Amino acid sequence: MSNQIQLHLPPAIPAYNEINRLPAALDQINAHKTHWSFPLELIIVVEPSEDGTLVYAEKMQKSDPLIRVFTHHERRGKGFAVRSGILKARGEFIFFTDADLSTPLKD
Image (cartoon, rainbow, N blue to C red):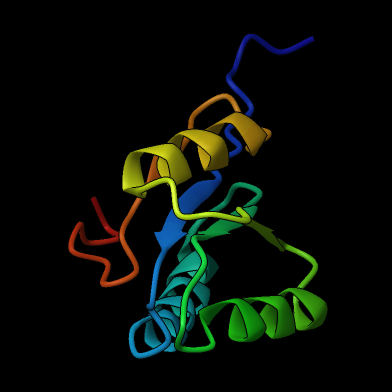
């Protein structure tokens, strides 16, 4: 058995009314993940939105088995969305990023 850490890095993205940002974020993540040599699981936690964010996220989940979408039945806030996404992640190291990818993926 190896002593090396088997890196599995699932990002969790809280999403509330993010239909204008989420498609570009997913495109950037897909382009960037080709440089990563570890498994990726993308978690999107959608707070109840009025702009179709959940519909879009669920559509992406159907087309990409690495995307997992969760939602809440009531708005609980960004902190709750981040926490619930991290608790659902299956990895040794977990991070979250906003849908605008304000933290560059290279970081």
